[in-house]
Image 1 (cartoon, rainbow, N blue to C red):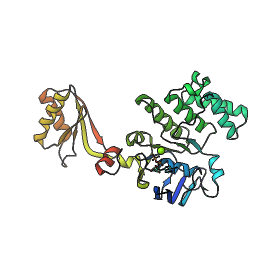
Image 2 (image 1 turned 30 degrees about the vertical axis):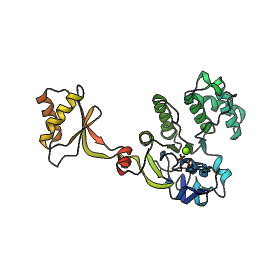
Image 3 (image 1 turned 45 degrees about the horizontal axis):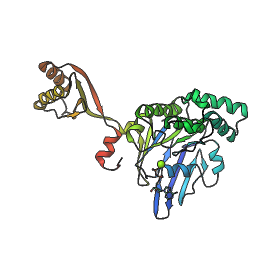
Image 4 (image 1 turned 120 degrees about the vertical axis):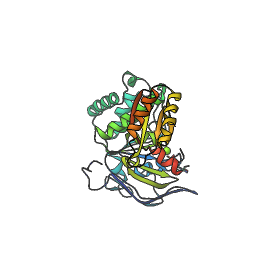
Amino acid sequence: MAEVTGTEGPVIETGALTMRFGEVEALTALDISVGEGVTGLVGANGAGKSTLIKILLGLLEPTNGTASVLGFDIARDSAEIRRPVGYMPEHDCLPPDVSASDFVVHMGRMSGLPATVARERAADILRHVGLDEERYRQMGGYSTGMKQRAKLAQALVHDPRPVFPDEPTNGLDPAARVDMLHLVQRIGRDFGIAVLVTSHLLGELEKVSDHVIVLDGGRLLRSSATADFTQHTGGLLVEVLGGETERDRLGERLAPAGLTCRPRGAMIAIDPPEPDVAVHDLVRDAAADLGLGLVRIQPDRAHLEDVFLTGGAVHV
Ligand SMILES: Nc1ncnc2c1ncn2[C@@H]1O[C@H](COP(=O)(O)OP(=O)(O)O)[C@@H](O)[C@H]1O
Ligand SMILES: [Mg+2]
């Protein structure tokens, strides 16, 4: 993780943070620490992600426990916290009869930017999130993807640190999801702004987060560097030219050599072999014997989904 600059200690820290809404306990004695870079906050719907973000913004008062952002205590300094932080809410918050351009300028002014600076920053940031000519149109006519971009732009206009995009990929089609995730990743990596981004989809956050925090029913399930979740399993993935038939022929040929093979999409996943087994040679020889074209042999890495779905801990 990148070095923390400008503050002593973590960007976000909570201690035994608990939030109850009547009978519902949305967060239970949560202890987390968030540093620089992109941190993914993941959990099924209702896990407590939005509640945590609202507490960190000082919009909700926790039932118990402590939290700080950039060293500011949420109980004492909530006005100080809201100034540097950028917030992209989960739900639609855009006035329909205003253009994205006017809205983002307005939000910049609200954050204390002088008028000319707010206009320049709004134009830059709207270009950056990919709203071009549409930015002069009323937002009521926007597609979901354009609305999400406008929501992200208003969270970034005042040069914030950190930024909390809450479910930024919600409602987007697969191509737009990828674009939005790249934007989020660039905020953290290229602009050096700490990001706490939420999603109920493990696979998405694994791609863009340096660190992942998993909530399950308001409790901390795990907090680790993404690389620790996605270490090499010791197995291999093999792809051959052709279709399922070719894939299965190769798998059947490898089984008698003592390799455990399973189909995974168009590929064959080979379980980690016994030590001293020359898997690469076995695969090459088997493909050559069968006259199959080898496309690739690559290390099989674990994915967040594997870690949690096999553990049965997170249901998404
Ligand atoms: N204002 C509220 N009043 C009552 N219950 C709430 C309120 N906000 C959230 N909850 C409940 O708290 C739990 C966590 O919700 P939330 O933080 O929105 O989860 P997530 O963002 O992970 O989907 C859910 O059970 C939800 O119904
Ligand atoms: Mg939520």
